Image (cartoon, rainbow, N blue to C red; front, side):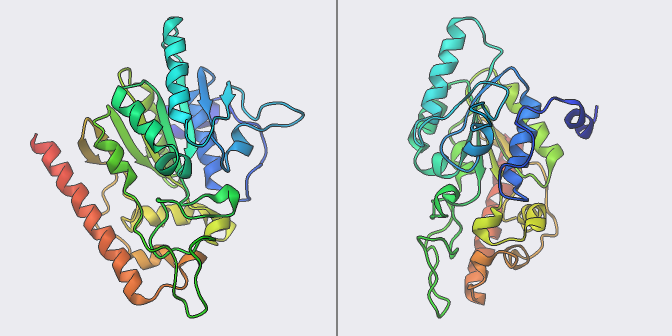
Length: 305
């Protein structure tokens, strides 16, 4: 059965209709992931954009068919670790215990809980949808926000200066270095790759699995609603967001980009980057090239080992 056939015939686990911003690729991601996970799932959505999609429904009903929880911003992984232990005590080890959390709840506020769960080997699947900021509260910067990006807390002045002063945290590599059984990056522009990685993560029986999905935010980034998937695709094609996976620190690039487009071609569609000058764009290009070379080197070491 092809990926498209799987998605066509599997039951939708999220309430019908569009309850996010028009063109939102995170809602598409959530629906896709939950179709693959299926009804035998318990998941948590901390405060963020997807709380209104995956948790809040209509007429006091849940927005999801499986049981869903609304944890605090900083305790998602800890809460799920407890739920897993509860199911284990009942002998129900087949339940998918899953987080679907934004970058603020993952790379910032919730990192201590997530890192602890990874170190302990708690058997949960943690999925981060990375839209590079706290979008649900007006787009404040997070440590996952790209350098030089405009946000409401890193404004740009009249002469074009300003923006965030620090580089984006390389969080997928940080999670890979936790020595967990499975870590992967994914994109809504490459659905077959995403589905395959969710299925791999579901098969993990010892320890934590982590998937980091890059989801450009149309509203916060200033991208036309019909360019949602194109923006996600260009992030991969420019190597700005490479698709790779890791098992116990053995890294494999799952979509090799031999002839990348310039980073400029990716960022020029986003309003949050329109104030950048050539020097700033070049810095982002150099960082992108450096991080991709690092991944290639890590892949080479993994193959030699």
